[in-house]
Amino acid sequence: MMTRIKLIHYPRSAKELTALLDKGKGRVAPVGGGVSFSFSSPPKIAELASLRSLGLDRIVRGKNGLRLGAMVTIAQLAASPDAARFRGGLLATAASRVAATPNRNLITVGGNAIRLFIWSDLPSVYCAMGAVFAVRGVKGMRKISCDEFYAAQPLTVLKRSEFLEEVIVPDTGPHSGGAFEKFSETANTFALVSAAACVALGSSGKCASARLVIGGLQLLPRVSKEAARILEGQVPSPELMRKAAAAAVCAVKVVRDIRVSDEYKKGLALTVARRALEDAFRTAGGKR
Amino acid sequence: MKLALKINGTERIVEAEPGEVLLHVLRREGYKGAKFGCGQGFCGACTVLLDGKPVNSCLLLVGLLEGREITTIEGVGAVDRLHPIQEAYLDAGAVQCGYCTPGFILATKALLDERPNPTDDQIKGALDGNYCRCTGYVKIVAAVKLAAKRLRIK
Image 1: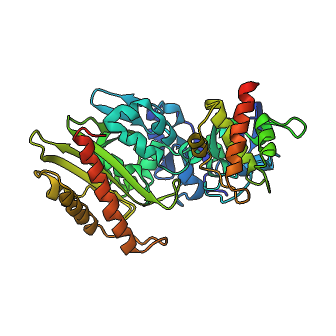
Image 2: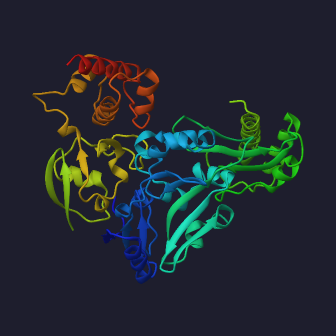
Image 3: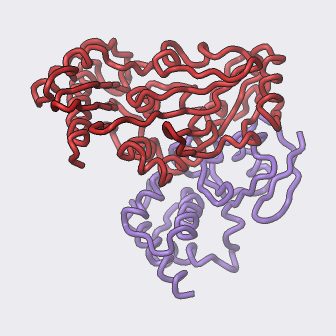
């Protein structure tokens, strides 16, 4: 297989990279593992600029959260002790469910976040966890909330000279929990449906916040306002969680999937979303 | 473009288009152990080790690999001097047509380099990116355990 890529740059600094991207006028794209470029590169892109020399291959436990460099591989994230200790190990668990071992050794956090596929697992988890995306361009660094980052295809959200530098996942307070559920035909294949849920309980035992994201139904991950409306301010119960999951599923327009019917996917999503909510509230209540 | 790659411990300068995938370049250079299977990173027939980790060479743009270390099956053993993992695959009857075997051997090597005494689940997890359509997987798991035992004794 041969792509249209004619030249690969190895910039030594972020400044050099952003200048290249700016000067390239859309013909140069930043690249991490390069997986998506190996089988489809947009016609306009003729040159790639590797992020390899920029020191973005680290996971850092910062004061306010966990910072994932764009060049961290999914395998690295799955095996990271810091990720395993952070917010109940939700990121590490979800990363370990992405594809198979050789794929996880290649796919990077940055590429996986930016080049979306309908079955992508981690973008849903980032949204449920309220992650922030640090992007850098010729005018410096800016942080983009997950809602804004995934309001459209992320590539269209970034300016010409910008590249994704880090995904920053914030800490949460006490009595919070999260869960990731995935249903796929085999353990190492694409999700038919997935769900990520992050919740927090108030002192009275009522739900203070609920962020449910259903994956596999549509391209862009979206935090369900419908589920939040049903759960927030209420004492969580199995019935309420079922209603919240149903409301979230109803609000999604399913993208056609040749493997199964829309109805099958919606039915599956109902169960997967309810289970994610149940697990998230269980962990928020102190049960693992 | 000319690229400096370290293949099986030897520095090589190879001529390649930056947009070519590693698998095709390796085969052109005579490393025919890595096979073309699905071309989409599912089957694992093209597995090589990149800095010691198993990866799909059909998904790797060769232009991104300047200075990286690649191990193919040719760097693991030779016809007259098999690696203990290769011997274990033969002795356990884990090889039939052999198309997938180089990928399995390399994935096994990466696993045993990291975990000399893996559990069944760890073996299955490490081989989850390699498909075999002849043997089934029981004998392959047995071969990995046999290789692990022999390598621990050595």
